[in-house]
Amino acid sequence: MPDTTINGINVHYETYGSGPPLLMLAPGGFDSTIEKWSNVGVWPPVNPLESFSRRYTCIAYDRREAGQSGGRVERLSWALYALEAKGLLEHLGIDRAVVMGACMGCTVAATFAVAYPESTVGLVLHYPVGGALWRINMRQRFAEHAAFVQEQGLDAVVKLAQEKGPTFQAGAVIGPWGSTIAGDEAFAKGFAAQDPERYAALIKTMGPALFDRDTAPGAEPEELMALKVPAVIIPGDDPAHATSAARYLKECLPHAEYHDYAPAEQTPERLCQWILSFLDSHAV
Image (tube, rainbow, N blue to C red; front, top):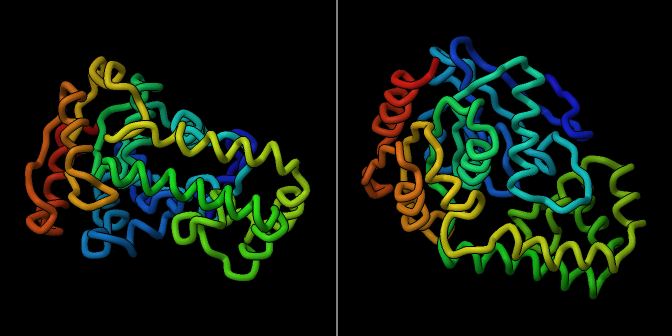
């Protein structure tokens, strides 16, 4: 299982199959790992890493601060996530790829396309995150973590992460660096030793900056409207993946096809067919 250093951070990744490249940005919110393509939501019966790799080179990775990838305490942003996704393509010597995002990966994918349109062959967006409930919930996670740090201190965050190992997605008080604390002793020591006031200011401002609207966050609508790349959008319908977020992306992306089916009608067979049909039409 290969690793590389991108933007000074260790990134764990895998490639599967051969053919035109497909960069796959996994679901799972802040716990976006390769394994999510086979063990969460609708993906187990689809098994995209196996199904799509029969015709395409599938590139999947643990996003920073998740799984076996490393991390660094700094202001996280959609642009930073996109920069590191681009860095992985560059490491692999790939100039252009279809970018497929699921869940929060959709936001990274759309931001990637805006930042690097020349590297984006097309976009596959499954269950884009967004909506008022999503914004409220995610901001609350950052607020709960900030309150825990203020009350218990940074040492308590380290102890909790090392003893229980929860991720930010599973337990809000652990914060966005919980996975890295649990997996890297040197990082954990540095985390506990940092200036608590500076860290508190970072956390209090980062959540509202990441989740700044009641629809799909990330790239601005005017930027999306200027994109020339084709896209396919498959909507969700729950508190994390509001249908309104998918429709917003449909409105903003001028070359998007939208599969207007409720999640209950999105069978694994249909989902696989929609994505492969898009790839077969646009991947080069």
